[in-house]
Amino acid sequence: MAAEGDLPPTKTIIVYRNGDAFFPGRKLVVNPRQLSTFDGFLTFLTRTIEAPFGAVRRLYTPRQGHRVQHMDELKHGSVYVAAGNEQFKKLELSDPHSLVKLCLTLGFHVFTNGDVLASPVRIRIPKYTRRSWENVLAMVTEKVRLRTGAVYRLCTLDGRPVCGPTELENNQHYVAVGAEKFKALPYDRCVPYTRPALRNKRHAKDMVSASEPNAVCHLVVQLFTFLQRAKLLHCSSYIPSSLLP
Image 1: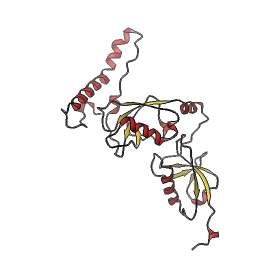
Image 2: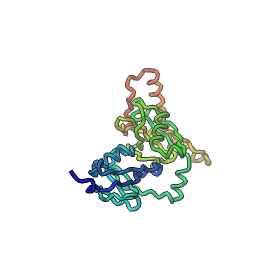
Image 3: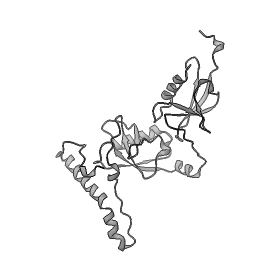
Image 4: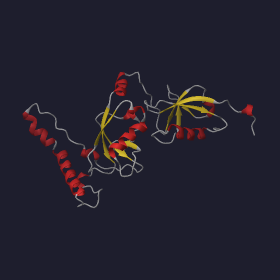
């Protein structure tokens, strides 16, 4: 057994989440008696920061994104960025566009995973809520109400996971996913159509004809929603073949 003097000194560090500008950072005390291996340290980080990307697989320096791979590379009083298997994401909060994004209320639409019959829910996230990704998901859970329970993650319409508040875009559409897997359905074909104001009557006919596929989609969705609520359809996940890609 190693003597007490042979153990490396205890270090205090601050760890942020990769790509999450709203996460305030977590101050951690790294005790070599309890965390002797780097893999054990990553497991400790996974439990501590509870990142939306899941298990912590990598640790980076905050400015250059250099990867830290050994316990002896950790420096007392330093700052690091925890990530999953993804690459380091450098946040430039000095960018005016980023600062504006942090201050404004964010509004977007959310589909229910596996259900294109349900209309997407409009959600507005104030800036103080976006400081915590868990608070964002909690607000989405209240609005969407999945059959499987809480919303664990948001995905783009093609299934790409959203890793934090900074990846959310205003007036975009997302899919709320619980503990189940993302279900690939033609959500993009059922995005509500908003007819723009017609300034020139000559183009009115062309604009109406261009909107016909979207309008037909919504007529079909409304019909199936009515039949489902009237209990004339027993399979809630039935999707007309004409709506499939």
